[in-house]
Length: 244
Image 1 (cartoon, one colour):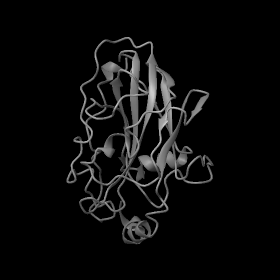
Image 2 (spheres, rainbow, N blue to C red; image 1 turned 180 degrees about the vertical axis):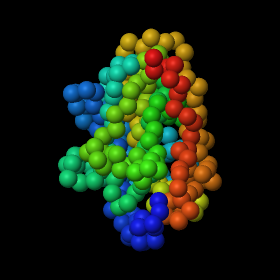
Image 3 (cartoon, helix red, strand yellow; image 1 turned 60 degrees about the vertical axis):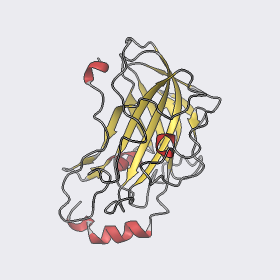
């Protein structure tokens, strides 16, 4: 983030830090809009900032399941949707504003029953991510704002069918130059995947545990003149062999 997007924007980011809070709320598949029926909604739009907190898995209040479940299909797309205020799906409002720039990441974890599963000690594998494009100086959160809060990803075609938790996450880096300054916004969705063609799951990671406060993708000064590229935290997206 260079030149004109340096000191002036850093000051603006601090001034708008609260107004930029947001959370993932709705989901959809193709033309079908699920609304919030399968979302373990956070208590509010405030971020998690402690990478060691149990809330890193599915946010505050995310440990408790809800009654609804959303259908998905292996090898097909699924959409998650972020907005700053509850049920405000107006595309005129930024999904995550206040210059809350950062990456967007999607994880999945296999569970026996998505409506009752605890997010503790699950094996999470990453299926999608968007960080920082050095050519355009655009972030994953910029794409959310350009797409009315929606992030569409492909469910791996070769994972087993059954219940999963889908974890959608945006990391705001506007105050991340110091440890504990990164803001994590995540929600978990309860999803039943049909037509899975595989019997083996990708290798996973534990959340919390996948990030540390000193990771280069977590503690980073995006406003400094020396910033030119960004390392997305966490594991790589699962191997393409799971998608084909």
